[in-house]
Length: 112
Length: 115
Image (cartoon, rainbow over all chains, first blue to last red; front, side, top):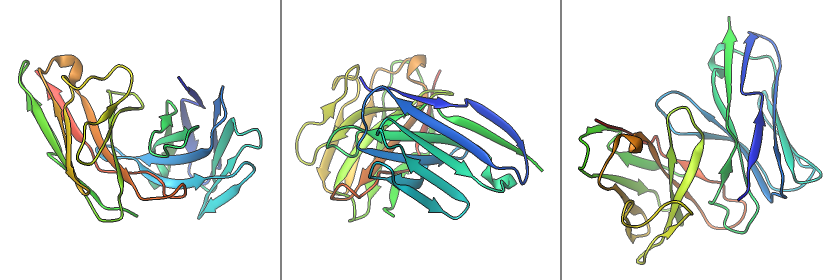
């Protein structure tokens, strides 16, 4: 089946620093999504990408759908303590847009 | 975004029993799915909940272990049967609206611990 490799697995940064994480796939994806999960809660959608090359921002977050359709990155600028959490990339290569394949997650810790 | 309510939020169950999880979504949702998140792991799709018919299960998941109902458009249940400690996970209901641009949203999950 499809697999996503997400890196890094964890990051420890100082408040105010920028963060970058990415996902790669061995197969082509039609949709890339980025979620954040806080403890005890379900994943919350941050950004959805639907076209190769698409670059989308949501506040301090920026994500891109790779031109090869096999990768995506998420950047967080000027990190703040509430950015702490687990970030997941997810994608789908078929036409069932709810059947997502998830990356392993990136655990982000922000030191004040 | 779609509103997805799931209950219970957590439960502790004994080995051999079953737990039924309920999920209620708002009218924006047309497709519903159930995911599992094992401790410290990512999310894995269990099945697509089909309205008025049998769910469509992913490889590795079977109806006898994870019976799913969806009697109407906005409600679904997932039962985890014959529980064992290996079933201790977070079970997440999710839904999306129509069209390719409608992304998937999640409920807050049910944290199941099997003793």
